[in-house]
Image (cartoon, rainbow, N blue to C red; front, side, top):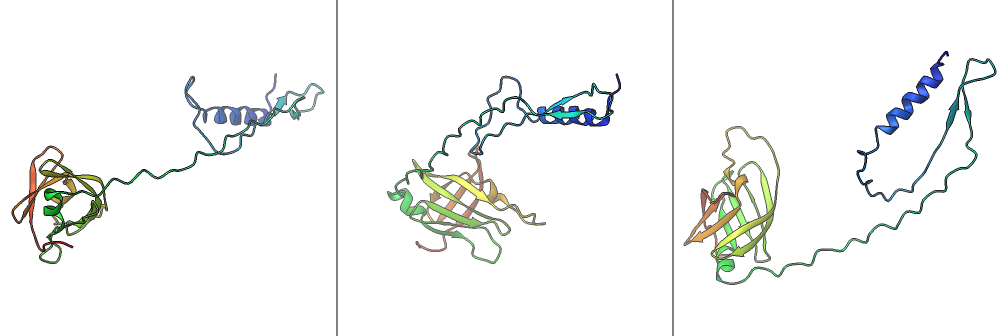
Length: 183
């Protein structure tokens, strides 16, 4: 039996499209796009011609209904931190000279800063006597010769007019002096 190039191409296309499917037994990903089914039958010629032909299926599948997308609802806002620990951390720490590390803590539970190269921001919550930094985002600029220790900050603790910065393992990675008494 002679295989025509069109039949080989059709088989290759079918295999390529089959590779787009997930693993056997894996749930299909959710989609909000309309579902469209396409079926094309390719048959070998029986009349002696060299080209295969496409045959229209006898019944086209019915498109499946797509549920409407789920409505987005914002996460309820947490109340701003309060108490003596929250009051002690609010304000600017560091940043006495151009390019030196700096952190600003607002009384709304947000913080932002700069390590002299990259900017960072996130939220903060009181955890006993320490302040835990949450949801931290940071730019990732490569700055030669810069000490970017602030990028590892996970928590801070106020001791007098010094902010002690610790990493996720609880190791102190640096300190920043208070530069003002609030926003």
